[in-house]
Length: 410
Image 1: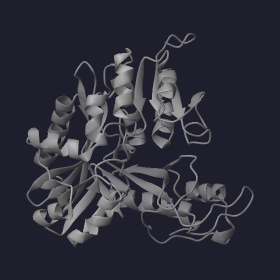
Image 2: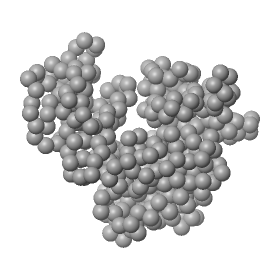
Image 3: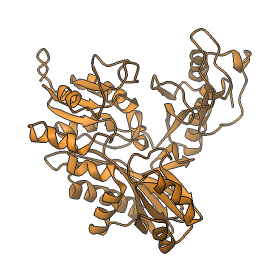
Image 4: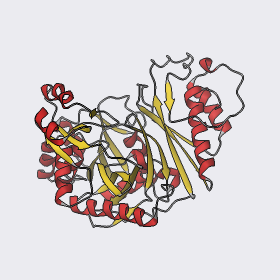
């Protein structure tokens, strides 16, 4: 407990946008979030009061993070399992624990466990040689068993020989069938050590180049039967795997049903909309879950909620005081409808000026920027729009993000 507030201290490994938004939730709860950041200019390190600088691969740094904390949890899944087991052996409470987290760290372990649980998933196989891919058949999808995210570590395979270079580089692989998709969905739930669970509405996630660019809550046109099936599957997996905290189950919807694509055991991009769009955000819920507090209500605050991601582009951002380049420095999911253009050329507009214009154009849209350096394809922020007409909510979210990207109306 914090010596002054008498309220819990939570240690979070990682200092990206997930830690940054978890810190915001911790403030309202009176809790203290201690962050292990790799760099002092990481997004969460810029705003949190209790920041340790160190690597997630350094057991000594992890021990320092855990000292005096009620629980250790995660902004990402990349902490070595042996380090987490060492912490647990020393009496540290870690949620999710290493025996659960391994299923989000290693895709082969995940697939083997899902098979044992008879969970629906694409046909798959481990890969040790090109012959394994030949036996499996192409076209297929090759995935690195560890470390991949946002389209990284995933390769479309049309010729088995394509995997030889990956194998030569020592990349552990699995191969999966290419599933004929209707769309992608996500079922996000939270589970406490007591065993209480809470589920948010199932959402549709829109992917481009393997990156989630847009989330629609609830998933439009999803039958009640299939939505319940997805939520029940996510709850069952959380219980069977022993997950404590938020679990995001990324799903493929096909003509025949749903299939598990990936698991994430932390707050997840598919539930950022919950900050404004749910009675309890995923970040507050994750804190409540890992501390074994009663979980919060997950109902929608509006009939429809749309989150659109803002992505980094191709060029180096301007130095302070210089104009932001048009279009290249920031990219987003899509353009919206036509609108009135401002008088200042977009190339001369700073990001701060773009924010001003965006807020004037769409005062009901909420913007979240992560304090991150711009890099191609990197998620540097998101916007959230709410309303009772889905087409209008989509239009407003896309218009807002277009302003931030282009410095002009869409």
